[in-house]
Length: 143
Image (cartoon, rainbow, N blue to C red; front, side, top):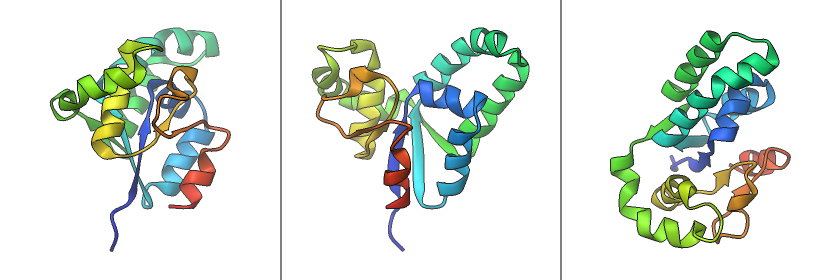
């Protein structure tokens, strides 16, 4: 049996998984074929935005936090900083001209040797494959 392909999820994809249906459906559909990862900082970042997104959508912030914890504990592997920090310098070199604060996502992609799923245009053209939600199923289906 071959190792499943990996995919790194940005915080904005986590928020889509919490508040939408399509991303969560894709995660559930392809969880046996693709290993989904996110750095620990993305879980924290998503958690920080839950109250404002929940308020805008008129949904429960508490339920959204529970959903985040469920998907981060089952479908998505949360990568601890101690594992990706050795790639910090390389990651910062890739993302330096865009948003240096995004280095943990890039470092996780380097660690896992996998593309990034994001809606953040700062990742486009940094030398690491990047997928957006409108085309991600092409990657997932080929897994």
